[in-house]
Image (cartoon, rainbow, N blue to C red; front, top):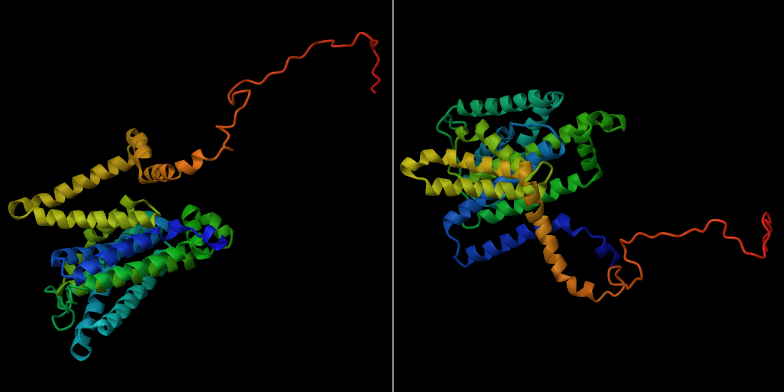
Amino acid sequence: MNKLKHFKWKRYLNYTVIAVILIVFSVMTLTGGLPKSTTFNLEKIAISIILAVSLSLVVGFLGELSLGHAGFMCVGAYLGGKVSALLVDSLGNGILTFFISLLIGGICAGICGFIIGLPALRLKGDYLAITTLAFGEIVRTIFQNTSDETFGGAIGLATPRFNQKYFFIICFVLVLVTLAVIQNLIYSKHGRAITAIRDNEIAAKATGVNVTRYKLIGFIVAAVFAGFAGVLFSYTQSNVSSATFDYNYSIEILVMVVLGGMGSINGSIVAATAVTFLNNKLATVLTGNLAVLKDLIYALILIMIVIYNNSPKLAAFRERYNFKNLFAKITKNRFSKHEADDTGRWDVVPTKIKMDALLSTDFVVNDIKPDQPKGDDSHE
């Protein structure tokens, strides 16, 4: 009972919500009640969540600005997609082929994260952002200029498509794995070292934290999961094109992290879901000549969200109607009956003096008894 009492349920709320959503949609797809367009959108949402949560480790918790996350995803998509294309004839398009491709894509992206991170993480601020942005563009250009026999060149790499009816289940299972690894890392002593570097790097060095080591850990872990997301992306498409992984996509992932709140895993999940859903919905609604308005409307919506989150004039409204306060009101109403039965509360105990009354004492000068002479300081 004591362990359950001290168990921090809030840390595992995101697991519960995602697991419930996964179970509901799994039952729907098994019964044939889920259209293919919805399963495709679920796949894209799961990939966006993995990208946002992994980038949040670098940007939100480590405090380093990285604009090359799409580059790591590109490495995973091309190398993992190439492995799956080579193995599909011998092993078939099943779980084993997918698992091998996932490992290859994640490991290669992690190696790139180490190679780029070792010199780049000695830089700070804008210089680091420019370096990571250059890395993403270099990787994309390399794959774009390959031959048709290797990685498809400008046409793109042909990859096998996993069964669309069930693939979103695998994607969301990997979302849970991503949360388990990154969230447990953040709540461990290594995570405290990472956040200490973000808060004050000089103070972290003074206390014995190996700054270079923990920066590399954060960068490599984020790169590995970006590679995983790239492999998932290659399985959702029949063709992987280098044009997908440009700097705009890196900035879009960064927008998910910033909108969700720096250093907030749950916020990154919500923002990734909202941004991906908004993009897909605008692309579906705005067709034909109206397609040119997609980016404009998308930008206006993002600007309004940023203004709402940061405007001082809306601070009182945000404080009153945020999810935390609404949840507190719900729980307060739930337990109000038990509180009313508590007769020991200070606001229901009868007192002679009100709590906000001013207490005072009157003192009488020369308050001496008649039978006691002046100057007699004796005490009984």
